[in-house]
Image (cartoon, rainbow, N blue to C red; front, side):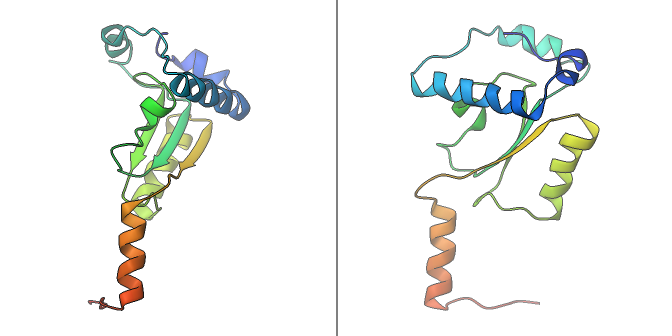
Length: 133
């Protein structure tokens, strides 16, 4: 598979972007992967990138969007933060991905047994937290 160009990205609809991710996830589930020449993708994206989707996910080492959706270099903007929440910085990155770089789809990827959320909820329940100013 080759990296997307401006021309190929401009023909992708949000529905098609979602199809790409679903197809890639099906390959992942079946322990398959697309045949890619990563060095070729590095060279093809040297002058710019045209990702078709923005994926917000957790930093959990088991939730790499590129692997879960079987995508290559330049295919998606991957934004990772513990608990996959949005703040102004992350929102700015998502807006850049869509409004400047042309991504067609935003995905918020959750997962089970999230340690960041579990830790935050446990701390809140124990009331062992303080607001600092």
